[in-house]
Amino acid sequence: MSRSVCGALVLAVLVAVSGCASLPDSSTPQAIGTINRDSPGSSVAAPAPGREPDLLLRDFFKASTDPSDRHLAARQFLTAGVSGSWDDAASATIVDKVDVLPETRSTDKATYTIRANKVGQLEPGGLYVAEEGSFETKISLELLDGEWRISELPAGVILDRAQFLNTYQRKSLYFLDPAGTTVVPDPRWVSGAQDQMASQLVGLLIDGPKAALAPAVRNELAGVSVRGPITKADGRTAQVGVGLGGIRIDFAGVPPMDEQAKQLFAAQVIWTLANAEISGPYVLLADGEPFDDRFPNGWTTADVASMNPFATSSATVGLHALREGSLVSVTETGVTPVPGYFGSARNMRSLALSQDGKLVAAVADTGRPAPEPASSLMVGAYEDGAASVLEGGAITRPTWAPDNSAIWAAVNGNTVIRVLREPGTGRTSVVNVDAGAVTALGTTITELRLSRDGVRAALIVDGKVYLAIVTQMPGGEYALTNPRAVAIGLGSPALSLDWSTSDTIVVARAASDIPVVQVAVDGSRMDALPSRNLTAPVVAVDASTTTEFVADSRAVFQLNNNDPAGDRYWREVPGLTGVKAIPILPG
Image 1 (tube, rainbow, N blue to C red):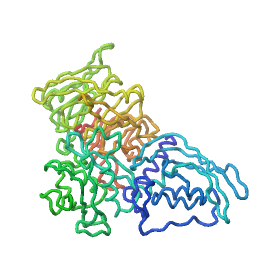
Image 2 (image 1 turned 135 degrees about the vertical axis):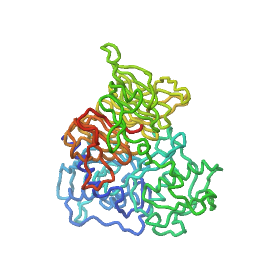
Image 3 (image 1 turned 90 degrees about the horizontal axis):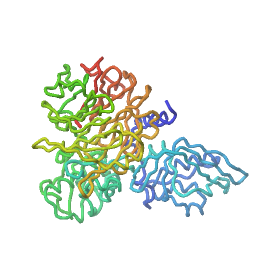
Image 4 (image 1 turned 45 degrees about the horizontal axis):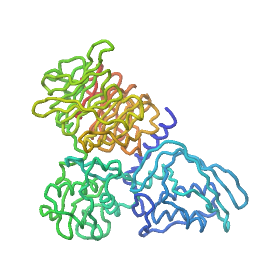
């Protein structure tokens, strides 16, 4: 395994074991440590006395992960003059494998070179931007009254990745998809105690989505504010968002809304808080009065269940597979060929079911010699016939839009298309997607998968994993915008991918030691999934919020996310062993 992927995956596994998502912390929650806010009930410890300058620098980097009161903890390591002038707000660079190398040293002065691998940047609003490269800077120290203190350093904060993951927590804000049918995650990294988390997240929610996501989502909270403190449901101000007792939020500036708009507003608030482990009931007020007369005593997640970001259609549609080129339905007792064209054909290479399981799109082998097109995109009803809608030398596995109205695919590695299907007539038309931002990254797109909310697209371009935003332009056409690499340090080429949840993807890579990984949509984490029972290469992956399915060189396997950690391993899917098969879930 390459050094880069080994370090990334081992660290991610260690963090997962330690419970990164809910680690306790005593500082006031900050999206990034540039806000001047005191840390309630805590004092800042002075640097340990008698530390050698190199050790003091390492202590300084650790203290820099506490953002409260403009990094007051880190400022204790600076001389008085430098502490007053240090611009901690200039940047926040996240690094790994930090080396502290001596440059020069005398009896009262020392200079060290800091070298590390740059892995990310923390931007205002708690936005993590994955990066790759080297980092180097110089820091000087002076001996004052027998103690070393930093006398010269660059602007901005340097955060050691391990310390960053132990101090900050990744929480998702939830905005609305363009149709208002579900909520869309916008991950942010915040630092703080759980009893301040609700205030922090609601404030960020009001501020709106990150710039790249803004054209593709809606925010019903735009322009509102919060009146007074956020409390427990009964008005208590202690331990807000901790344990039972619910939440009470009084909004100001809420415009007139119908019941549907209120439902969308509430869904954003409730799913943002619920997925940050802040339990209900959620008492929402507007200028002191119930936000919605239907819920005077508060809302619950059941009241907005239709917009649950972790809901999936795979449970109702069920598992299918492409076995020996034909579509089969898979149950605990075995496999059954699907009636109609897709169950009788023997030449299909890849296939996608619509979200409701009623429609099918498949890439079939034409069997024609070059230079004739080798692939044909076939579309039809689940148990009926099919028609070819386009041909090409290579067509990626199709992927369905959430409303089942369109199929997306990449043709010949560099053209992204949408196949529009009229619900009543079944007529199809093909339109191009503006994918210039993606094709500029490389030569060949080999995988394209839409998220279940339809707002993001995960792609493999020349073996690298990217996420792009699905944006509808003013004229109605679509574009893939702001693509970003997210699996930095993957080490081996990506072979296949799919969405696990709305903010994580599963990636199969060309490696035998760790063939399958899970990647956060902001690129902040990459976790190794178990490899027990798998035989490389893993050539295909499909996933739901509860289960991952993969096809290796000899069978189809499933991994249950609810299994205990010690008993979590890949199990063979009955009926799909010893044959060429690919797992298929809706989407």
